[in-house]
Amino acid sequence: MRRELLGLWLGLLVVAHGQEIDTERLCRDDGWYDLSAFAGARHTFFEDENGLRVRYVIFGSGEPIISDQILPVTVSGDTLSYGAERVVFDSRAGVLRTPWFEGHRMVPGGPVDYAFAPLLAGKSERALEEALEDADTVIRREALAALVDERNRRGFDGFAAALPLLGDPEPSVRARAAWALSACRERAGVEGILALLGDEDPGVRCAAARALGWGSLGGSAAVARLHTVQGDPVPEVRAAADWALGVLLRK
Image (cartoon, one colour):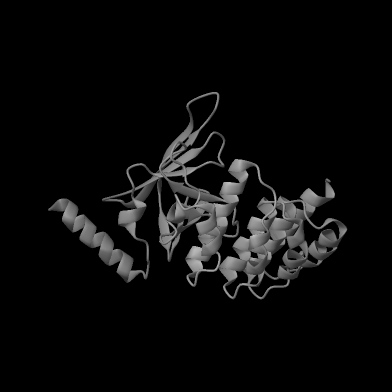
């Protein structure tokens, strides 16, 4: 009974504050795995009388655990904030992802059964390429992620099939396409990525700037355009341009 009342109270809190987090899917026993932190990290969310919290464990190569913390979680829409972390819970795709950074995501489970795009796990490469033309925005977006992961696992460069998606009507797909082309070092995508630096959507502009740095793409033309983006009105876009310039100017 106490657990049922707690669940009802938390559910009412979610409705009252206009939050849209599916806590049943978020609070997995096996947590969410992040490959980018040292030797990996696990984020395990749970609910108790103190509300929504997370156990955040960072693993190290020299020692089993570098850090193990229990942190309160603040929810705003689909965004979770705890400690220095801020992530978006993309329930359709089945991932946690970092805002303004297309290449960083956390997935269910652990490193052994790691699937970069769990929504499309197990699909053949041909099926994934066909999914790039799907009417569903999330399917197109996740097909890009799955194909990048497939190419990286097999050591492939190039991703020409992603080029048309730089002009996709959905900003989230354009942003993902810029990242995908950069991650696969697709040189034919440079002009399209440069054009996205002037996109009306700040998330797309940010992704384009990061893509140029991530893939070391565009040379002097990219450097010149990124200098203009340093005057963007959105702080995250300016930060992405600064970072990309730092990478390109070291080459």
